[in-house]
Length: 183
Image (cartoon, rainbow, N blue to C red; front, side, top):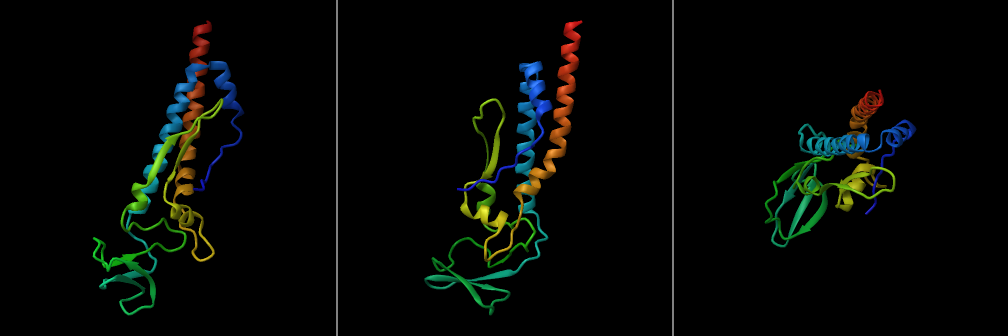
């Protein structure tokens, strides 16, 4: 599956602090990055679960062998057919998100597919958040047929200012501790 990565540039100060203050700052930075990843995951989940979506309403019409999914009304144009006749525990309607909105929760599969994991990286910290479902990428960035429904990148962008503030505080604290021990 494809991944979307967010890279923060200009971290020379952080790298210099890691070299100068060694393990004293490493643990703090790891905690800060972990918290930013957890905040981002929480933000993605909340935005998907929140109501207020303004996209098309889809109607699920159960049948003997297939469930017909119609857009805009029970007599609207069929947009999909699902095997199984519609006996699943799905609501009969679903309001999708509009372009630019976070994906609307339907079955909860996208929300439960979200992961947050460490990835080994030489001389650094790397936290990856994402979904194991292929369509998460299509929702985030769109396709030729659908407009993007971004959720991941906006969540990370909202987490970055607090993370950078916390990094500056951690560097200042490590510097103060180092100055105290050298006096």
